Image (cartoon, rainbow, N blue to C red; front, side, top):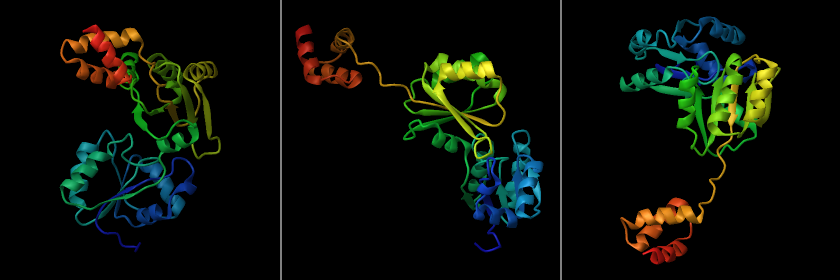
Length: 277
């Protein structure tokens, strides 16, 4: 990469704890950007000191994004603007996606410089299935809204990933157990830092641990295993489903519909359907 950056928006992932995780490409972009849009200028100033540079910065966060974004879009035609969060990959649990959307709509170049992400790092530490996962961000703080949010994802057949703070952790783990059942889970914190840890167990055991020990320090990611395989349907379930299907369909189609719905043998269901008719 040359020292001069082409005008456009550069989405730059930054370390989530260990400054040694900043990639050479990320350092190059931050060193030569005309402007850096940041969550907190104090945090990014520390990162810039680490790589030995000073660059102009502008605050861009939840509270001012709508006001600041038009000015950034206007400058992208002639300037290279880097977007960073305080830690990790921008757009993950922050308002950056609107800036990307508007930059593209205005015809400006958008470039990503990938790197650390706490959600993905936690998945690698948890020892839970990683073939499918759902990132759910922060759950609501109020109990009712939190329970509703958990209910929406109860049946998702994937590992679930949440961000959480220390003071809310025990209550969140208890709510997850109540809403999801006593699944296997992991609480990871201080990822990439000196005291990195991943504590594994059931949701109930983890909720009890952190209720008794008090709030842990540091940034926390909770990873929860997917639901177990559904219980096989019994004869009563099959007969009830067949009886309902036969009110609408001939025996062969009713058997096919129920076989697919309940994961049962179609031929056996067809024989039962004929007997019922």
